[in-house]
Image (cartoon, rainbow, N blue to C red):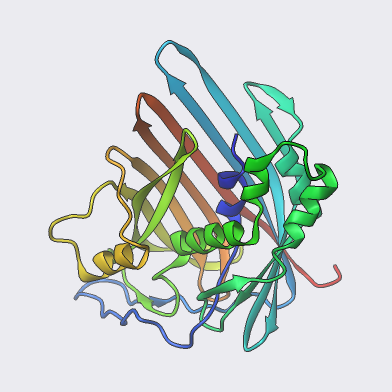
Length: 300
């Protein structure tokens, strides 16, 4: 299993800017009042999340291949440089291939590497900080010249930052610093790996309402995929696609899922997304799930 979907999909990132390019919306008559999803992360508290990703690959005449990754992430938000510094590490990774536990070099790197992100006050992604530490962690488990060029490319600073930016936007782009009303839609561009090639699609998020959670009241979003830009695409959707570089979209990509985000104090409570793609005779299904478990005071 390539390491990308099993780590960066669950990285928390925010960043630059002081104002939102998304205007507030007023609810239609009869709808509940809007919820404003400001970015107010828990300061210097340790957020623990459980993460699970399953990937299946099917080809005609070949047995199905199934990979599983499970681990725990520990995340802390600290005010820094007029915005936020986010530090996130991975713990207790477990990788399973066709029902058998296997050792994983990406998992070993993640245990030795803390991802550090610079965020802005309003929740816009800025940059990674000290991303070179990932390559040092890789050298600890696989010395240079070990014949692992794909893994080495994966952990380069530029590659890490590009994935982190895209994946944060897929989760929260267009949601922060604006009023959200039931039925409102926002969009992001995301990718799924098929045969070593990243295939792009549009992720549509629809506000379904609010829900009480152990971390406070939360916004509930349903998730689905678009495999083409509609002819009558809203301006916001078209702008999102263009700002991502107007990537070619892969026909036949489907997905379903749900995302729950606490809004009084920003906590990513839960996210479940199942993406399916069929390309060149290969059928890939990637299911990712993250769940907030605890939010501890510093030192506890």
